[in-house]
Image (cartoon, rainbow, N blue to C red; front, side, top):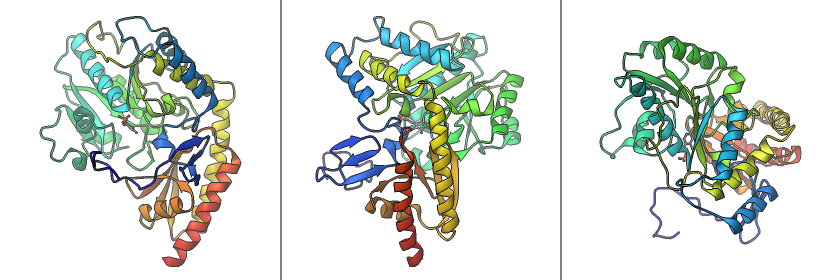
Length: 392
Ligand SMILES: *Cc1c(COP(=O)(O)O)cnc(C)c1O
């Protein structure tokens, strides 16, 4: 591995040359079934023909012009997001953490715009992950991620994930908003109960707070709904997303109701790249597929099948696995032995996955997988489990 790359990742000594659907191939043509999906990014798998076509077509026309000018693809993508979500206004970013930064800025601006600049604090949850900028790190409050980086961004109060009483008790005159992942990804595929999400909406209404949802990982069809909040029958005031929305192209967004976004006037926020024509062409192509009649129903169908098969595995190997968690195709296998030992064995067997906190293995396949791919994953896991169970 090259010394020139800053060693912030403990990288696996494995490189891929091409991808096709749910498969990745090395230069030596070894095939892997990809249930890591670039960490929930490759929502349509690798080299999806419609994404490749959009990239090639836009790539020949226009890549970047800056936000000094109108961008028709961005107007179209924003309008489609508005049509299919709670939101009235959309701002495009290049990543998830930037989407969170924007959402946090918007929430603070909302209150200052309404004459209450003292309301700037945001309540967040333990074991959350919101990205790697200083403010996103401060929002999540993970000591390991913050260590050595000096003073945090002030203004975040942390409460236990899922505890509405503790959350209510943390509200003060300075509270501006509540920020939550409907399903914690990095935290271990921990889904908030629908009652907790409904409770958050009630609390926000009662105290005049904005409800910000981080759907960077769980959004964009991952749970079988366009966004996970739909499962709870509530709507947020602000939502940050990224990952699956670009299908592999760096793209994120934060969106809000007109009311919440009232303070976001010309000059209040910006991004040089955000929403450039190339990103917008690909974002629109992703939505072309996600919003196609029957696509999300298909995700529900295949995820029901996958869950059933993974639950069968857990039942056959109770010495290795505790449970299947999550929703849709955002699944977690809670392990009883070290998750990384299982992940290494899976990879040796040709199945890619990614770890999460709480000793969980994340299974984040493309939303386009079929039963045969699930069966293939199960066959590899069965083999791996047999060996690990014998060794345990
Ligand atoms: C990945 C992730 C982020 C950060 O996204 P980046 O694109 O890595 O900046 C934020 N929130 C959640 C829930 C995520 O899963």
